[in-house]
Image (tube, rainbow, N blue to C red):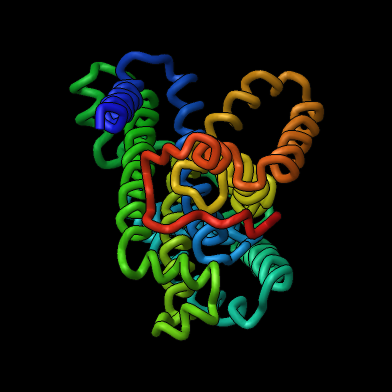
Amino acid sequence: MKRDRALRLVLLAAALLLAALPLIASRALVQDVFGVLCLLVLALNWNMLAGFAGLVSVGQQAFVGIGAYTMFAAVILLGLDPLAGLVLGGLAAAVLSVPIAFFAFRLHGAYFAIGTWAVADIARLSFGQWKALGGGTGTSLPRDATRDMLGVAPLREALGISAAAAVDALTYWLALALVLALLVASWLFLRSRMGLGLQAVRDNPVAARAVGVDPTRLKALVFVLAAFGTGLCGGLLFIQIGRISPDAAFSLLDWTAFVIFVVVIGGIGTLPGPVVGVLVFYGLERLLSDYGTVYLIVLGLIGIAIMLFARRGLWGSFVERTGFDPAPLGHAAPHSPVS
């Protein structure tokens, strides 16, 4: 009990420190941590798909791009506030995930992974034909779109900061809120009857069906919800970036490959795994980013070593060795489905 209470205090202190960061840190650090939080949002969504639903997607960049392009269209073509466009981006990703699921769910294993990647590339090429948003070269948000965004003016007055700093603070707090909401919602869902059914489907689909669990329904629900969360994150990322192009919005490396690395090294099929993975990833990025391609080589070698010698990732191995799990889900996590 004392250990659990101490852990809760540490987590509360960490959350408060993160919330206060825009008030005490430089803009450069706020922007860096914003990027880390968005990567964590993507990792939590991918972990729910691959780690708990057994859906190893290599095409989640499709929903990042759909969310981002919808947000740009809402601002540039409809004249809406970027935050309204952000919500529309999440909804558009969720809606478009339905026909994608109809196609992708007919595939299994490696075919499912390749199929989702193909869909994402088709989306990239299709959005590249959207001339109103710059076609293949992309476009930028109007200069005043983010400065006039809902919430920016009150922040400027309350904190006495520039419009650009207020935009950074607002997008940072939205990313932090999204992370916290996803962590809490994921924990509650995975401990619910549906969540336990989902994990049962992942571990033994035949046995799960025998006790009345509908695998397709559960997996489809997770796929659509993950698309919604990923689309929201895509819109938020590109509010901060301010410019969009098909190659940037549908980047396999930035929005899927790095996400898979984070989840695998942290612990796929565990809720705290992506958090651990993103901290390791950020630390390595800070240490090795000046070394160019060496940075990517080291990331690859670490990923291979983790998959060979700690298949449940850093967090999974820690729980296995110590027996201490501060976020139990009521169901043992399996070996990595990508191992």
